[in-house]
Image (cartoon, rainbow, N blue to C red; front, side, top):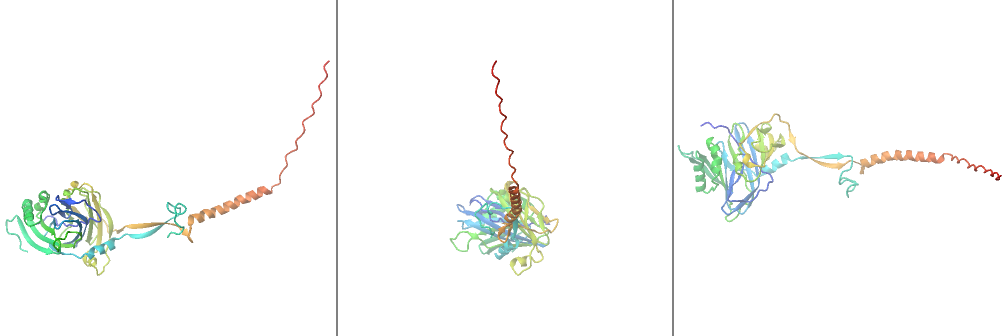
Length: 373
């Protein structure tokens, strides 16, 4: 059967601290996640990279988790049959290096708060396919590091939920309804169960990345399962393609912003190898204050241009000349001639002859009065 659109999954929630999850599902763009009963787990970070070359899609995803759960599970719908392997953690360090902001110095003339004399600073700035008619088919099940991964097909979301529960992938009942649109479009599913290698240990810290690969004609990022989230969601989307990429709409969230767009320089690292043939990296971020408003999946399209974008961090410094604030020199330079002019005026006025006041004339004598007759 011909599939509608080939979609991809890539979610990187960078640096977001979520509330503890107890039994109810935690939903995110990659699927829905729950821990063991009576256990707790939080996703402190989720990083993913998507590569699309026009024919094939690759997703490398890494979770950083905290809590006391020994097992947790989530499910990711995928539009085509996927192969799953472990990824290289070094990819994410190289990504952070590639998109880091540039630092520039920006000078200002007049002093600001913290500059002298307004502060105390110095002057210097210093498997087998499913049988016919089966509602749930197991394509493959494998152990990858801390992951128990099952690749599945399904024609009935309720039957899918029952299979997951029966095989140790305990997921919430309400997920069945959320999966219906993907069942209708004949997607397949990657069910992931997290389980530490050592018995008795809990899930904590950065887990090994998972690397998914499947055929693709056009990239779309599924977000429907994020509707189940009870807390605001953050999306950080890293896309490697031939050109700069963008989302077609906001799908119920705030308008996405581009934090980086540019070509990845070839090197021998994991990022360079992954970017071969798809050298343009676009990093998008988006906020979903009300996850229930999410009404679809992100469709990724080529941006209008390949204009590069890079964040700039400015360091503001007071402009100086030989360690002296320029404003002070300018003000002082203006005051010197003004002071000289005032001095000249004062000197000139002091040398003028003093004109004495006119002498005071005595009053005229008063004539004696005539004697009375």
